[in-house]
Image (cartoon, rainbow, N blue to C red):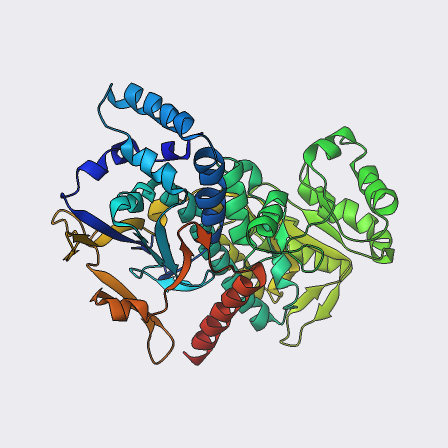
Length: 497
């Protein structure tokens, strides 16, 4: 596809709508609000992918490296059919192709930075006066691509903060926490690219994933190397078709075969609610106790339906003493026992575990951890499968992302650009002029608008892309380090409070 087609239709002729003599358009990408309670900072992630994939790979392959006559004819055909014959002229397309690169400069914060609301993550401007139109022509595809990895990375960090906090309080194994949040979202995402981008955002804070392409994504675009670092991992696991094929009457035999023959060592996850989960927990698993304890590895039980809070922690409205009342963790502890953590909470024997991957949300994750704590169990007794309800049930408006122009130059004179609709609640009120991002005495990011060029140049925004060249590359380890620092700072602040 001709890369110039990757834009909203109304972008096509904005170049003729700007004032005559326009030479510069300067825009920024900013999260303007939060629809998730308690979240007032948003993780910046995805720009490096956008630059490599679209500004370099796609523009080179589908525009600059193709014959000018061909790409101009393609674009003319599309737009003439779309807007009508001769609705616009195409000399600007020819000029861009003759130039051979995208004449824009992008200045950005380091990816992995958690950015306060209403603070720009990056800015973009044209570098040659005649291509002022390119800046905001790129807005559509830029916005389309970048909001999701930012959003998923932010949400995964919120999960990590919850799991870190409860692991510390209940004495769980902190080295296990990166595997405690497991990405189950692949099949529910809006296409492969969404699954990869979101899955990569998840992997900034966890290493558990079933979204294999997210690992490829991070190797290709973020310089990760699975032979040298832990990018993402999983374990052998069954699905309902496997259990059904073994038949209901022989379900316990399927368990025996899986733990003794198919996977005699290591971790294996077995879906256990195909028919009667509580029968599995209270009859089959106890019968297999000695075989499970004799294995070198862990058998992970996976319930997959019902209310996850009640299934894991117990239902206080159920009959006292029943498995439903106790919950899965307590039932497993009664069978296998375990140890007591350094802070006094029960840890299941290392040969048995539990994972729940249906209907998990941030609220349910926290509630499960809290309920387990109230029952005297460590939070690390459970792995959470985080699915597409978390990572797909969001939009660009979850954090109010927008790319807006705030400064321009016409005939050499600077003009501050801003919007402040009286019919809006203040969300759409924009900054104005050039932007300077700097850190205060406590290391917190702040933004100054209406800045001069000196202030803009001296802040935290650094040029990462200019005139077709990627000038700064980050790797996965660096971004993960920034995320870990953010988690540590939050924990320290909470403990101080």
